[in-house]
Amino acid sequence: MADSNFIDYVKIQCRSGKGGAGSRHFHRAKYVPKGGPDGGDGGKGGSVILKGNRNMWTLLPLKFQRHIFATNGESGGAGRSFGKDGEDKIIEVPCGTVVFDAETGEYITEVTDDGQEIVLLKGGRGGLGNWHFATSTNRTPRYAQPGEPALERTVVLELKLLADVGLVGFPNAGKSTLLSSVSAARPKIADYPFTTMEPQLGIVPYRDNRSFVMADIPGIIEGASEGRGLGLRFLRHIERNAVLLFMIPADADDIPAQYDILQRELTQFNPDLADKPRVLAISKCDMLDDELIAEIEKTLPEGVPHVFISAVTGLNLQKLKDMLWSEITSEANQLQAQTITHRPLDGHHRVADEDALEFDALLPDAAADDDDFDDDFDEDFDFADAPTDE
Image (cartoon, rainbow, N blue to C red; front, side, top):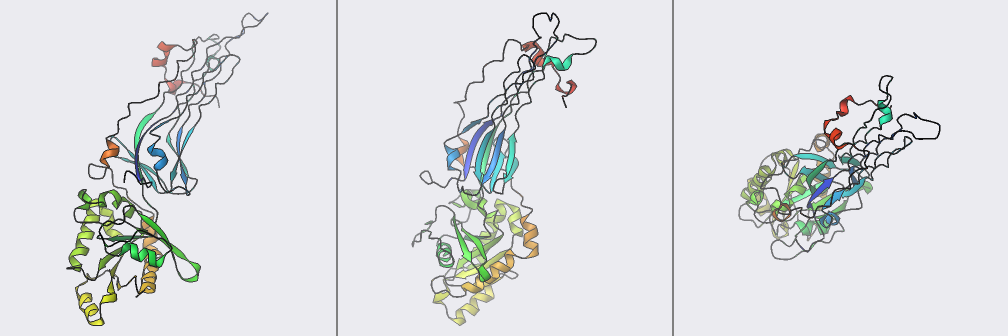
């Protein structure tokens, strides 16, 4: 995966800008001996904002931009001059990106729509100038409000592909062959395990010019939820799928046992996956006759819609599309798709090489504010008691 352009897990460090300090300047002019306070307000610090971009399909740009720092607000000036606001830092991510706290693994937010903007770290407010604090009893306030400090956080971004149908199965179950048969996608197909090294998406045409998205997930093996094989790296994409299509080849030694293993691995990864709608497809059925199909059908798990297909000959592919469309458009599925629960990151769900990254090349802090800023006052000022300039 080191040489692949498909990056779905990135750890980055973000920092918003701190607010500029208010000025404690006094008006100076000829023949105006007591001009009074006229220190301007400090500018607002820049925020770190996530923005969805439907034209992106990978987190690759962030792999080489690990430090995202917004700029600080500038200090206020004389004549009630406002300081310049800091520049916001907008991070464009693919739709379906989920954000976790890198330290605790806690879920923070997710970006699902194109153009959707979410403020990840809010910039600090600028401090008020000393003219805000002038009163009838204190006409020459010699203090101003400091700007709010910056916020800093290390986060993990996970990309979970947005697809209607996710293909779940062991290696060489015929998932890639099915995707190439029902869509224009051309995934790698070979006669050895793990030919699919990264998720593949395909648009499946349906009746009346309708369509749905199908995702080919790399093969899952027993123990995938604990880190074996490639399953741990890609099980996260299954959480986004509306319907799961379990694929087991007809020549498998024990079809019910393989189904139970797949079901168990998904549940151990995220218990909420147990409630997702599913369809069972027995692949490679071009080698079976009606008698063998009837015998296999007796052993299949009850309560799960099933179909016998062959991606090579096209056997029952239209029937499979009908079953998938029925599950995708069902009212229960539409309601369930709106309530996705993202499991928190833990030791089993992290990518070791990414989490081992240490942020030691930090940018230097911005230069100190001007001489009008009172450092001793900065520590004691209470923002809650400050007046507002509405």
